[in-house]
Image 1 (cartoon, protein in one colour):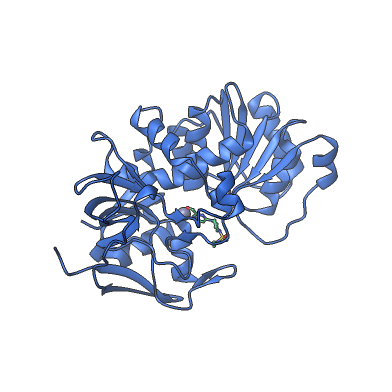
Image 2 (tube, protein in one colour):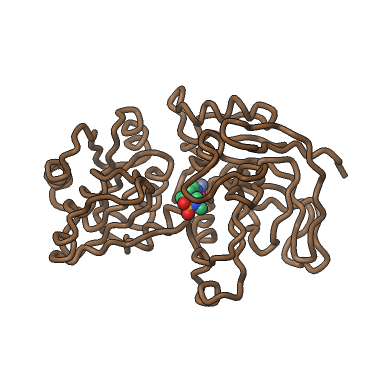
Length: 349
Ligand code: 572
Ligand code: ZN
């Protein structure tokens, strides 16, 4: 067994280091994983560049990474579901299992969740990492470890579309064509949406969205949400039934309310300012439901099936690949979006 465990550790704002840590031992219900692929998420970049997201502050060194897949190296003594050599996607949030939310199956709302790379919990952008065996999903042979890592953001899209009630024939507006907007586009199409329109403030992202199956795109060049809602209606040939808001921008949240058909739903996926001005009476009087979203729960299996069956191609999200030793270059690429970066993937093998 190797003794080196090179790990990408954020110490504080703008202080990312590669350091060697001990190889951990799996607990009785855990597996030791040889990490394979880890995608960089916007939150990893924020912990690096800002040292915090909201109230979650990097107060002690923390290993980054939560979009990941690896290979089982060793099983804890109670583990029967996996064996050494199994390739798995890692669901990064392990809840307490006993609180009222866990018992209802809404374990994403558990207040005592361990979540990779959310302070103070270490992530898995490293060579070796231990994780609860029942939050590791075995991958079929034909699903790659890169695809396994991408089940994490894809699960956000699947959960958002479920929260929005996206179903056969839905017309859907997705606001924001970053990685999370794009996984929502993929999930919405796979879940039966007949038309998806996607918005963004950059042409390049809209071009990618179009290549990934968007039926319509709108370049946002104004803060006038009413004007944008009118534009959406014209482009889509009617107001969308559902809006999945992935930018967090005030204009976009306002667009999502004003632009959604009466009786429809807007799901708030993106996080922007803590408080925004919204046309609440418009939403109330037209029965436009405003729904929140927090990560995902029970969505990994469906996300995997969609990828394994070929209904969703997540590989198109990956624009850049780096080795763990090149973590600084990988993070810089993710931060700047240089070269049209969408999903930057790091190989830890
Ligand atoms: O892939 C899951 C994920 N969730 C994010 C961000 C990035 N990736 N969320 C937004 C930030 N919140 S949080 O509650 N927090 C920092 C823990 O503000 C979590 C969900
Ligand atoms: Zn993430």
